[in-house]
Length: 231
Image 1 (cartoon, one colour):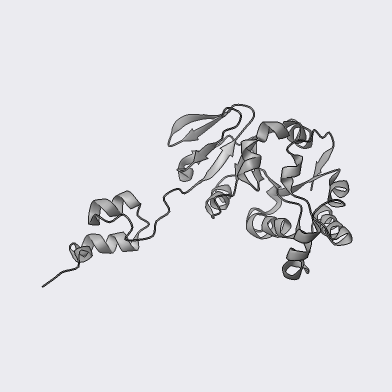
Image 2 (cartoon, rainbow, N blue to C red):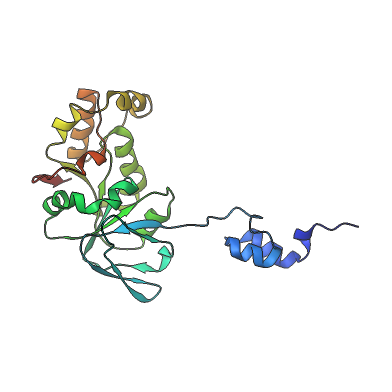
């Protein structure tokens, strides 16, 4: 009689199916690393333009990657940062990688603060879950469109409360005037009723509707700005 090889050790198999096992653990138990779908690369990217001494798995980790690179924190459950560091989420990995080309923007908008930059991509709940375990202030620097505001409100502000804020540059209206009408029109049917009880954020929503356009955060990579504010 042919016996399915996956049923050779029922107790071990039950543990494999019930737990969040890694592909290496599956291979060790069954010889098949693809038996149960497992995320081979959990975590999120981090970067900084000044050295920040953090802790990973109980050991010191200095976050200060060379320009053009960033770190990826896979063991995020054991990643700890100083309490006085403000965490800034960037919507895309390109803006994380090129963080030094945006230094003047953040130095002005968040003057005097030590900043650790992170990204929600690859998209998962890892970053948000980690943020919920730490007390640090949180600033969201996303795309200036209805979908980006919705992401902030539902995925971050909803869970982090008053320690979460949305960065709105002072010159954003001038940029939105010449932004993407196509993106706005694509998003409008889904997010046309989006509102916020945060006055500056509601003003941004009204601005998007006024011009029927939106603007991506990557547009700030080359800019050197001096005046910004946080909601």
